[in-house]
Length: 82
Image (cartoon, rainbow, N blue to C red; front, top):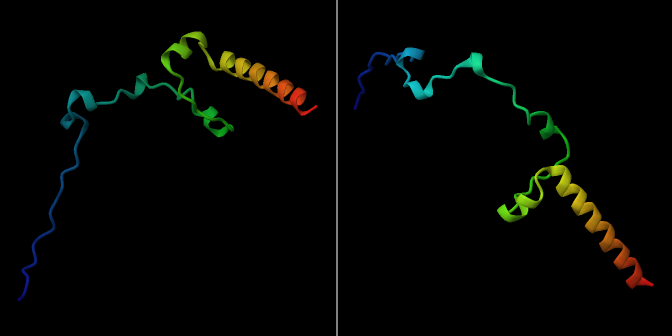
């Protein structure tokens, strides 16, 4: 059984005008990713539930509260060890 060679199929490169409006990206309005620099640091992402997030509006307040709680827990552990 021999196969007949066919010509190379040509795929037309799409142009910006071929794209639907929702897929056209306006590069002049693009902004740098404000989170890009943070990814390099040693961070852990935690998702807060909605009621907790209302009490802690930003990462600084969450970290301060957790540090205070950790200090209290370590004091309690030291007292129990005596």
